[in-house]
Image (cartoon, rainbow, N blue to C red; front, side):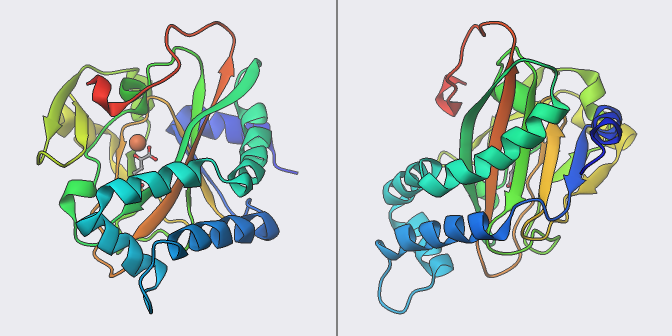
Length: 244
Ligand SMILES: O=C(O)CCC(=O)C(=O)O
Ligand SMILES: [Fe+2]
């Protein structure tokens, strides 16, 4: 049984936590098999899932996007969410728990366009109720080599920071980079989420974080599940990067 008082204090202090081996393997292997099967429907002969993903990213982004939407709705994802709800119930203030914007992100090898620059989730998802974010590698461990996300330890204490909007290319993600990021990075210091499959990184809504470029040959699949404890009706509940 985890010592949630201690974990809560750590989350409050650092803005993040790493929990080891918390996703039960039967649930997780069903999730991986489902993702594999969905990609298989789009695969060419002899292609593995990483090759299919890379090819679609190059030639058919619309189909890759549809696949990511299917993954978000997989029966087996609901199984994993039960695990995150259990943890969320213990780490969030009391309220009615909801999940929103769960997804899988594809960290393509050697592709700067697909790396998120420094940001706070609270700028993309201003939900106005307490939220925590769950981040977990799906197929391969998240390492320095494959560009695992990094965080600025304790930076959540700054609250939600005004941002500068930027885009590296027309087909790149929109970035909302906190003002004075150079000073913030200097002050708080960067830490990487080094995660094994089965581990989960948990972070605060205001923690400044980013993804890094993937220097391996395989796409880094990261699961992301966001859980809020609703204690008042938020002004808005549906968010899209097109909003910016
Ligand atoms: O894993 C990544 O590449 C980005 C992660 C991220 O920004 C998030 O989970 O909110
Ligand atoms: Fe993020």
